[in-house]
Length: 109
Image (cartoon, rainbow, N blue to C red; front, side, top):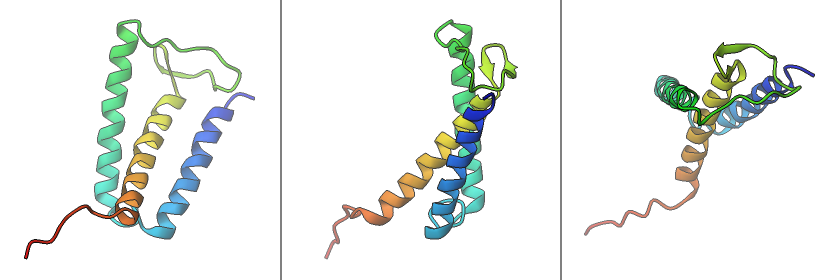
């Protein structure tokens, strides 16, 4: 069952990418901006995780669904994929909300 968590992240990412492609919300609307935003967000959260690991706040649990490969001490291989997915889904939800919800701006006359 090792790798099931990574597979779930990748399949979820593919589903969000399909919605993104269908409605042109993030990556399909502005690929460079989306890639930069996801990259910066992922690096930020990886640094956040590293600080949490160094201070003993974050500890990797063992589970049968992980691959068992660590990219750093106490950081499983799945973590960067999850963080990138988290940033990407955040952008897609934000873009969808902007499209659906009223802007809240009032016109000055």
